[in-house]
Length: 512
Length: 41
Image (cartoon, rainbow over all chains, first blue to last red; front, top):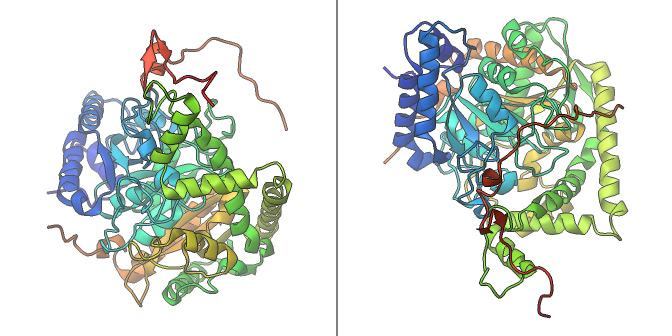
C-alpha cells in the first residue's frame, strides 16, 4: 500500500506511530519518480544515496525513542537554486553544469536538522528567470494536470513534483511570483514568506532585494509545517530578520476567520483576467463571508506601475549578481586554450553558459544601471517601490489580509508564449496584454516589491478548461500567520463544499 | 535603524581544498586563470 498520496502531516503521523519507516516512504517516492518523471521532468538530479542515509538515520533516532519534529523522515524536493553540499546545483543553467557546492544553504541546514529527507533537485527557469520553466537549459517541466501545459515558473519542477505525488513537500524561491504562480497552475499551495523570514544564505542570487525562499506542499497545514522548519534568523544572511517566527502552524489549524477583514485589491482583482479565474475567486470570497469574514474593497493605485518597476529593479540586480559567473572560480570555462586572455575567456564562457532570457535581462539591467540613465530608470523604479509599499501600508489599515487571484490565467501550453520571447517582452511592457508572459506575475510582483508575505492556494478548476485556479492571500510583514489562518479556513470550506480535495481530482498520469 | 555586528571571533570556514573544489583549473592550491595583464591588442 503506497503512502505517496497522503499529506506530509499524515506521513509524519504514520511515521510517529511506526506504521511505516522513513526508508520505506522514501523508496515509495523514488519508485513514483522512476515511474512518472520521464513524462513530468520535475527533477534535474536525484540523490538516492543521501536521501536513504538520512531516512535511515531518522528511523534509527525514532527507534531509539528520540523526540522528532512533525516532518522528520518526510521526503522533500529542493529547487535547484539552493546549495546542498556535494550535490549538483545548476540553477537550470549550463553555466553551473557539474558544479557541486562545498557548503549547505541555510534552508538545507534547517531541513537536515528537522530530519527532512531531500530526494533531489528540481527543474526551474534558468537562474529563476521565467514563469513557465521553459527557460531551463535542461528542457521544460510538464504540468501533471495536462502534460502539454507549463507547470508555472520559475519553480515549475517543485510544483510539478507535488502535483505528480513525487514528493509531499518542496522548497521554492520567489522573486516575482516563482513560488505562488507555479502553485496556482498546478493546484498546490505555495508561500512566499515575509522578506527576511527565511535565510537566503546559499540561495543563488537573482535579485537580492526581492528573492525569498519558501515552502510548497499540497495542503495549507503541510506548507505551515515546512514553513516553521525552515524559517528563523540566520546571521549569515544580513537581511534575515532577528525576531520570533510567526506561529503559522497554529494559524493553519485555527479554521476560523470570524471578524477578520479581508481586502480585495481593486487593481488586481480580476479585470482582464480569464473568466473562470474570476468565477472561482469570487466563489471563494463568498465562502469566506459565510465563514464570518468581512470583505472590503481596497485600492492600491500604484500597483499599475509595479510591473514596469519590477522589470527595471530585478534585471538591474541580476546584471550585478550574475557578474560573478566569470569562469574563474567555479562553473564552466570555455575557450581557455592558453593563448586567449581572461576577458576573452569570460566573454566566450558567458556566451555559451547563459541562455537567451538570462542574457536579455543582463543587457536590460546593465542599460538601466548605466551612468547616464541610472536615475531615470533604476532610481525611478525604486521610488515606485516606495509608493507600492505605502499602498500596502494604507490597505492594511483597512483590512487584516489582502486577496486576489494569483495569476490571470490557468496553465498555458508549452511553447505558446515562448516562441518569440523578444516580441513578447517588448509587447508586455508597451501594451497591457494580460495574457502575455510577463503579466503572469502582475498580481504577485507587488508582494515582493513590498517585502510582505504571500500565499497561493487552489480554489477550484476553471469551468472553461478544467485547470486549477490559484487564490492569493497577502499578509503584513512578519504576520505570515494571518495568511495561514485565512488559507486554512478557505481550504477547509472548499474541501467541505466539494467533498474532496482539489488535488485528488488530478487525472492519472498517462505515462508510456 | 541599527548596525548589526557579529562578535570578532574566528569561526570555521571552507578549507583551501573545498574552496578550490569547483575551480575549472587550479595549480599549486590556487585558482589557475587565463592571462589578465598585458593582453595582446
